[in-house]
Amino acid sequence: MTLSSSSRRLQASFPRRSLLLGAAGLGVMATTLTACSSGAGPTLYTLSVVSGQPAPGGPRFVEVRQPTIASGLDRDRIVTADTGYKLTVSANDAWGDSLAGQISRALAGDLAQRLPGTSVFAENDAVSTEPQAYVELSVTRFSTGPSGAVQIEAALSVKGAQAGAPDTSGQFYMQRVLVQAPAVSSGTMAMVQALSQLLGQLADQAAAQLRMMPPVPESATTDSGTAGSAPHHRK
Image (cartoon, rainbow, N blue to C red; front, side, top):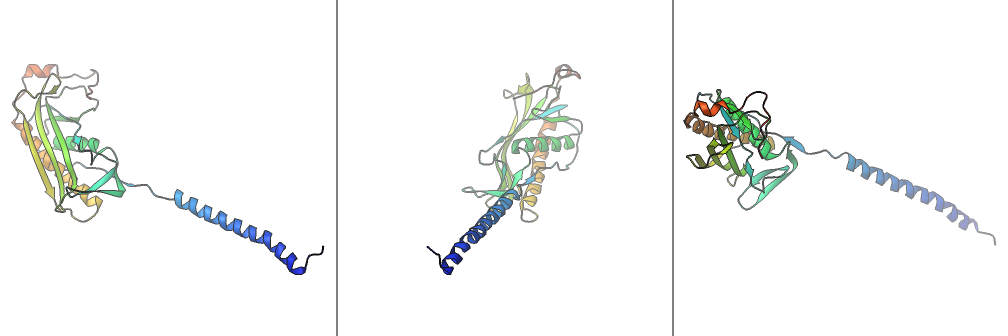
């Protein structure tokens, strides 16, 4: 049987069309892979130590314990707003470290700046000294609040030490606090800067309470820790 000229032209067009469709498919695949591989990671933020008014007084050694963080805040992505009924979580901004770890280190730095005669360290730091007092924080809000102002809502406590642990048998300070400040401008950076400033205000309150604590007897500080002893860790 002899093929007509029109049939031969139709058969010849099939391989060429298949090649064009294959090339188009490869182009779509390459574009998809490029889009997936070029996605940028989240922007990371960290809290900062802020300056305050240095003043004498307070125990020689203070430990800032790892704060308790409300479960809604304890996440990598930054909670940018808390209306009381709804949490808004950023899609692109994250904490550079755990929020609890950042708060404890920033608060310890704030206290060390305000208590120049006191050695302040965060819980789980490798130190060879027994603290004479503890500062604890339980955080329930760490973002902009219902009014739009940046807020920290927390329970702040300052306690003496007994047998290497917070002393809850004697007198100690515990206060529910709400500190707030308007953000200088909108955006996560402004909120994180305001949160750092508010932590400084909490440090002012804690430092004032630490200065009011009675002095620790000298005999109790003799064995509080010496250079070369094993690092002191607490869970």
